[in-house]
Length: 201
Image (cartoon, rainbow, N blue to C red; front, side, top):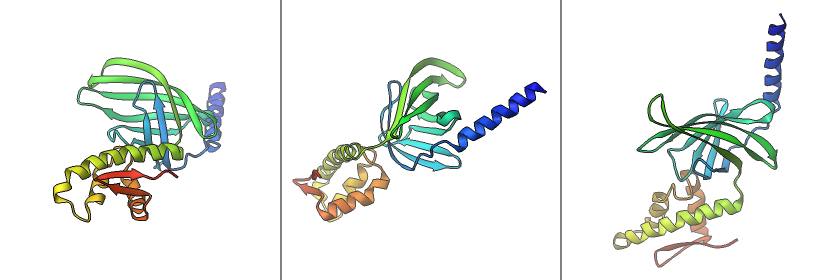
């Protein structure tokens, strides 16, 4: 009877903790870790969990959900290379101002069910600042400039848009394209000698 009572109490505490957990808004975030690839990510809430997709490494997807005491938990990952894939678990606590930080464990596999190695480390997640987003745009525009140069012999009125679109994954995502097109139209992004430039705010 006591075991049953303790179990019910624990479940109630977990439910209460989950109800009071702060919801993470969809948008651009900055993920940092000493074990995994760091950088800008897009976070989308779907089916009761959060899907965090790395902008510059689209094969890196981390799934998060709320845990007890306002923690967020890594409960599933899609991270792989040609040589291995990585399974990650971990928790992070809220630290204020939308920052979460905590520990994680990464397990590397070359063969299913047979771990190749383990790594333990830390991770943080926070809303991306405007500075982070602008720096991402600049990296993407560098790639777009290279692509525009490669099109110089067959340049058309749509070449700038084509170059921006082809540079997706180098600092910005498909979701950013409408904004980038608008910035190109209103002069916030300029093109000179096949080079894109972003005006400073």
